[in-house]
Each structure stands twice: as structure tokens, then as C-alpha cells.
Amino acid sequence: MDDITPDLLLEGVGPALMFREYRVFDEIGSTNAYLKALPSDEPPGVVAVADYQTMGRGREGRSWVAPPGAAIQCSVLLRPPLPPDRIYLLTTACALAVRSAIAPFVREEPRLKWPNDVMLGGRKVCGVLTETEIMPSGRARAVVGFGVNVREAPPARVAPDAGCVRQFAIRPVTRLEVLVRALREYDRLLVRLYAGDLEGVWRAWRSSLETLRRRVVVRGYGGGDEVAGWAADVALDGALILETEDGERRRVYAGEAIERA
Amino acid sequence: MGTEERDSDLRLAALIDDGLRELIDLVSNSCITELQIERGGTKLYIKAAPEGGAARVGAETAVEAVRAAEVSEAAAPREVEGYHVKSPIVGTFYAASGPGADPFVQVGDYVQQGQTVGIVEAMKIMNEIESEVAGRVVEILVENGQAVEYGQTLMILDVSGS
Image 1 (tube, chains in turn blue, purple):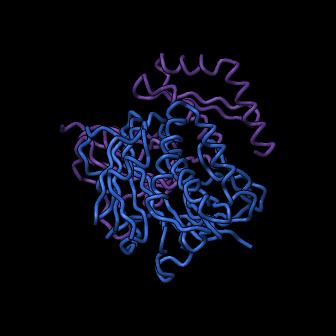
Image 2 (tube, chains in turn orange, brown; image 1 turned 135 degrees about the vertical axis):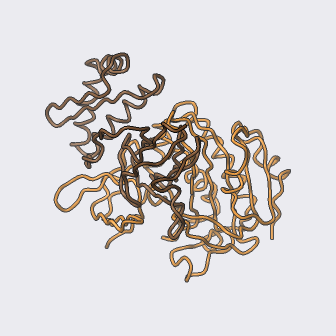
Image 3 (tube, one colour; image 1 turned 30 degrees about the horizontal axis):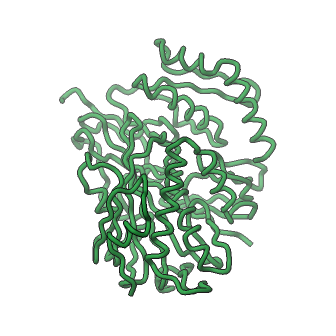
């Protein structure tokens, strides 16, 4: 198992504008939950990394357990100067950063599945979950968490579509290398976002989406809503624009996009 | 972007050139709380934000929300007394932190300022909605899993007792 320590991260990531402190845990409930539980006046820039997550949190409270040393679990605490309907760009920037981080290790170009799953050879190797607290004034505190299956993927019975980077690697890959590259790139993209280049990051995201120009079904959660159509484009607010069979254009903001043959 | 989308964007761009900002300022600085203009295929909806500072961003977002293909009728304001907790974004409302979990709040509950009263999910972001005020929940206007619009009232709090 490769080691990840605060010193190695500090040295590897180098000077970062968005991250000021790395906290590494052997075992933790969830790195997102840890950051969310910090006092509300905690300055942003804390990065929490767990070697092993006993209780990872995904969408809708779905949980999964990564064996020690198999995956990276990392969350960052941010106070983005973004309006509520653009906070999603924190998540897409994170997916883009992970995508660039793993690209040098694999033959095939990693792509994103709308909105922000990182895919390799049709398998999901990274997911991003952002949790925010928005006050009615629009001010937000955000925790962006991502998990990358580097050495091992969850078993098929838990996640049938999951893969790991090592499975597609053309050279040896360590979790530290992937994490360092991801954080460096994420810092760079966050600086762009905070400086107001929302459209630039949106464009980069849009051109990385494998979901576009395909027939997809988007399954909603909770209500079981389902929308089928041609994934024509994405809007500036992140919505997937679907052209349905009746020629209607619908914007979808949540759900899982499944490709339909 | 498709032609329709681009045309709509152009029409909006023209509107902005034609003084949308002045309109927004007008709404922000007057007693008007909402303004809706419909011309051709473009609808413009401006709603004054409760705080002056947020008015402009709110208005821009509202323009986007109305451009969306699915304009929800539910966004229409309701005449109910009390403090309206509104959704800051377009998304899906969740009453609880996960399936099987207890709802954050129920009718009759007393809510503290800053307490999470629900989650609106969009773009795989779980937005915890915090109440800006303390009060008792008198009505919850949305169901678990329901799609909500920007500015839509999620629940109403009675703040008279605090």
C-alpha cells in the first residue's frame, strides 16, 4: 500500500491558492461529513483525505466500503464566490481535475458521464459529491468530495458498472500520484472559476462529456421520473438538454443518465 | 447549442441591450415585487429579492429559470401569511437526508435559525436549505422527490411566536 501523509501532499501539490491544510485519516466515517462538522467559521482550504472510508456517502445515502489502500477518498472545504446555480461548477471542475490526473496513466482518454462521473472504458472510476449549505442570502459553504478507485473497484454486486484505474493502466500508478495531480489541477481550475472564468470551465466540461449526442434515459431519484431523449447539449447552468421524441426540449437537473442503444 | 436555444439566447441578449438592467433596477428600487413580460417566444420574469444585494443575481437566475422548457406552475406565489422558505436553485426537493431517514422537519415542528429544513439536489449537489429565521412550520408545500423551481416556496413558517 502506498503512503499518503500531509507532508507528502504538501510537497507534491506544491503552492496551492485554494488548499491550506491537509488532514489525513487512517479511518474515518466520511471525509465529507468530517468537513461539514467543522465549525461554521472554519476558514476554507481544509483538505481531508482518508485512507479507508468505513462509510462512504454517495447519492441518496447509498453507501459503499472501500478496502484499505484501494481508493482515494478526499474532500475539500470551500467558500465559493459563486451564485447558487453555478456552484455545480465546483463539482464539474473536480471531475475535470481527476480526469486529467488519471489520463497520463491510461491508454484511453477518460471521459465524463453527465454530470460528473469519470469514466474509463465504460466503467465509473470516480464520483464526486458536493454538499452545500446555502443561506437565503445566497452565501454558501461547500464540501466537495471525490473518490477515485485507483487500485481496486467495488465488487460487482455493489457497483456493477465500477472500474479502477489500475485495470486500464499502461504504467504503474499510485494513489498519491493521482491525488497530487488531481489536487494541483483542481487548484488551477478553482482559481479560474473564482476569477470569473465560469464559461471557460463550462466549455472544458462540455467537451469532455461522453453523454452528449447520444440517446439516453435519465432516471430521477425518489419520484422515479424517467425522461428519454437525444442528449443535445448542456446549458450554462449545467442542465442536460434532452430532445424528446415529441420534439420537445427538456432540461434535466438531476438523475442518472443511462445510454440507450 | 441548437438553433432554438441560440435564438432564444440572442433574443435575451437583445433584451439585455434594450435595458434589462434598467428594468431590474426599477424592480429592485420600487415597490414592485414581480414583473413578467411575454413577447414572441421569450418570457421575462423578474422577481425582487428580499435583500437588495442579491437582487441582480436573483433576477438573472430567474430569467434562466423561465427560459427552461419546463416552467412550473407551482412557482406562482401563494397568499399565505408567514415566512416563506424558498429554493435558491432549480432542482429536486428532498425532505430527508436519505431514503428511510426521518424528514428534517414536519408541520408543527419548531425550527431554529440556521437549521436545515430540506435538501434541493441539482447537478449531483446536495444543497442543504437552512432557515434564515426561527419559527414553527405551518405548511410544507412540496413533496419528497418533487422538482422545484428557483424561488419556489418550499415551506411556510409562523414566526409570530419568536
